[in-house]
Image (cartoon, rainbow, N blue to C red; front, side, top):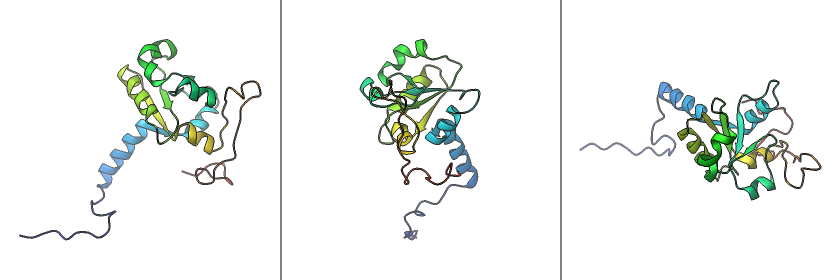
Length: 164
C-alpha cells in the first residue's frame, strides 16, 4: 500500500483551489459582503449610496453609538417591521457590533428570506469607529457626530485609503 507523504507546510496540506474555482468563490463572497471603507465612500458619494444601511443591534447598542443615516431594526424584529421600514427594490447593507457578532448575518438572512437584496458590512460598528469614521450616539445627538483617531492596525493613518 502506498501512502501519500504528509506535507509539512500546514498552509499547503490542502492544495489551493484552481484559479477558476478561486475566482468564483471570491466573486460570490463579494456579492454577500462589503466593508466599512466601501460603505463610508458610498455614503459620502453624490446622489446617495444606492442602498439602505441597517443597524441590526439592540436599542441599547443603537443608543451607545451608530452610523449616521443608518436605519435601526434589531434582528429579532426584521420579520415584523422590515416591510414598514424598507423599500423592497432598494438593496440593504446590514451591520452589528463587529467581527465577533453574527447579528448582521442573521438580519441579512431574515431579509433575504423576505425577498430583499442584502449584503453584510464586515467589521460592523467596531471597525467603523476604529477606522475613524463619524458616528452618533444618544450623548452626541445635540452636539453632532463623534470621531476617533484611526487605529493604525485597521486603517491607514497617513493615506486617504488602504489602496485595496
